[in-house]
Image (tube, rainbow, N blue to C red; front, side):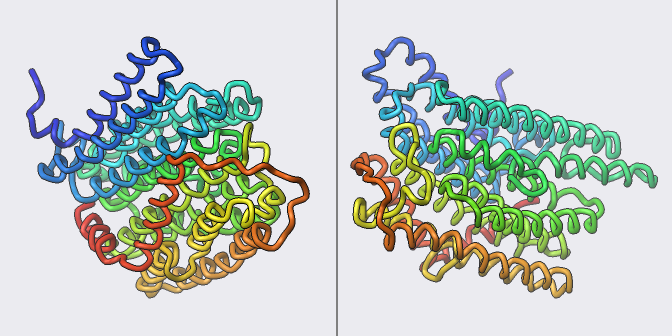
Length: 486
């Protein structure tokens, strides 16, 4: 028996992504490698149609497949982030793949499959469904991390990512088992502990294991050890995707669980508070001493996970979590735009084999490639949180959500957030000083940016400025998504 048409509408983006991923895989051995650019176009078309398919989802909200999946404003918001990130990652990586002589068909198919898994995580309303989405995304990501097969560092990155990711998956799955034992259900809206103290305790432990699994995926301390090596060793376009899409999907699942499961708010609150503070300090203090721009941005990603966790802590601290959830969602938009552009710029400036990714290699970039340097400076300023950029308003909304709780512990968290923003200014401005105020130690030939990369950089810079100057629509959408999360 075929599923109801309404159910198919509600998972339309995932169906489109998987269909085009399989189409690209089917055509890859048939189409000559010299013409694999056509497969890149097909993959881009698939991502664009998946974005369009979110309209079908928006027109048919509700539960799908007996409540396993939910189409609402919250899942729609996250779908736009992860599918948009995939589209830009594919478009921005075409020149890189050609330069490094990497097969583009397999790359595009893996990105589409990974994005489908992220979409499942964003819309899942049941833990085993979320686990399926997590594994779809993770397995494709493990392969993408080692896509430069001839580079030992890339293979090392994939091995670390796979081994540590497997441990995180085991924690997540064990947490599901314990939660089921405590509540008799894996549906988020039915997970109420049974009428005895042991069930409450078991559910707390189960949620703790689930939190560990998700903390790994978002690169939150103290589960961040894999991040610098994987982000550095993976191809830069893959790092651009890993730092945005999977992180947004994992945060989406954490937010959904936080808002739906009524179990021990103090447990969630203190776990999020400690993880936020640790992530900010570990990420920013470690980034200060880095000489590689790529590795510095990796540690920066850990710090930004801490900022988003601060918004989640604000949501967990009150009975009305909408402000914290909306702040986290807006920050995910600004973060995705900036990190995508930053890592794609590193891929371009790094040259063949990504040999020029140290801060010293960026010296004089303002003269060699003024447009690239200006774009990178804007993105760094957004990460820093300066006005007119999306990053400024992202941090403002998080500060506002944290302080609105009126809790002493949250005021301290706001102080930690402000202090870490000051720390971060050192290493962001350090790169800008190198680009504009230092002479290069060696002559590096500037490679012209492919037109596809130029389009992506225009999109991310325009999006960063638009979200910084005219945030009303995004904020309204985020607020609506926060209200529809349950």
